[in-house]
Amino acid sequence: MFEKQNTAADSTGPAQPVQGLRTTASGTAEDTASLKKLEEMEERMRLAIDAANIGMYDKDFVTNKVICSPRLLEIMGLTKPILTLDELRDTLHPDDRHLRDEAHQRALTTGLIAYEARVVWPDGNIRWIQARGKLFFNERQEPLRILGTATDITDRKLLTVQLEKEVQQRTQELQQSNDALLKSNGELEQFAYVASHDLQEPLRKIQTFINRLLESKETMFSPRDQDLFRRIQSASGRMNQLIVDLLSYSTVNTSSRLFAATDLNKLLKSVEEQLKEAIEQAGAVIVASPLPIIPIIPYQFEQLLTNLISNSIKFARAGAPPRISIAAAAVRGNAIEGGAAAPAATYHSITVADNGIGFSQQYSDRIFQVFQRLHGKHEYPGTGIGLAICKKIVENHNGFITATGIENEGAVFTIYIPQ
Image (cartoon, rainbow, N blue to C red; front, side, top):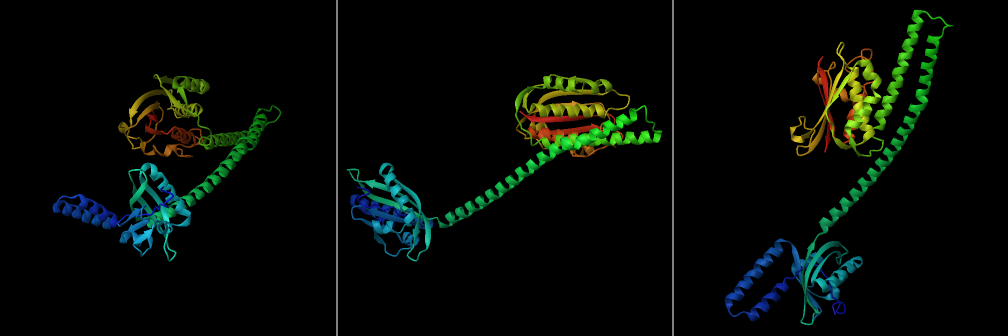
């Protein structure tokens, strides 16, 4: 019966639906006081509706008429206060009328009308409305009447459309940036391949040929010539190490990050085994307290510990064999100085402390930067990339690393990994 009677979903609410309520009430009221209260209620309702800029309508399926409030007429671009159901439906944009029909169909079950649609004014102007309403039934559960409201939401819709366009534009720009980044990463991988093969190979040949010349019994070189060869050999060795370190630094972020629960005690044993020769030559002693099992990227964390321990061995004080202490603890973020930690979070704290030459605390941030050295290359070997790699690895674990030092007393590196 609802569809058969050509039910129209419009969009706003009645000025006269309220009058209808009053008429019904006055018919059942027993005294003038009740009628006066109802009139006062109607007046307050009208004031509230006017303040909210809402139009009202009253659809009657028996008479096939729709009574519209003045504000509804403004919203719909109409002048005639009483319309047929078809006339009101025809004010909707042809492409949106199905939205009204579907809302009315749902109302047969829910009793509530709700939809948004475009209306076309007689002059061709298009506006957006938001319609809400209540469907009433007779005793045979046939649609009888709709009391509803309509609100002009054109400004909101236009803003939404504009925002959607901007989001699409930003998404497109982001996609272009991602494509450019992927291309750049591909070029970086190609460079890494060239650096690891084509650049290192001639350096290895230079070092090999110089070694053969210096070790040759048939060729005699003056002390000056031998010194020049050794300098060439040393320079090529530093360049080879620089290439290796640059490759390590460039691949820390591009390599896969597969986290796994790892026993740091076993990982440390593996690092000590790899550094066995350097540890024995320096007479270094590594003392470690029990370490936890935590989710990490194993091969990256192994490189992190290798770099820190190697750093402690390299920067040992003359006459003082390196002593390296490694310990772990759980620390609350609000107890960590510097502001890098989340106050409410808990962190795995792993410290690597040594008794080496240390450094002035004013350089605590500088030492983690690429190519930053606090000492000359002839005093201590290295490329100035090792600690920068450490910083990147810790950031890949969503953590951070700090350094404290005292000149000629030692340095402490602390790794913070969120639990």
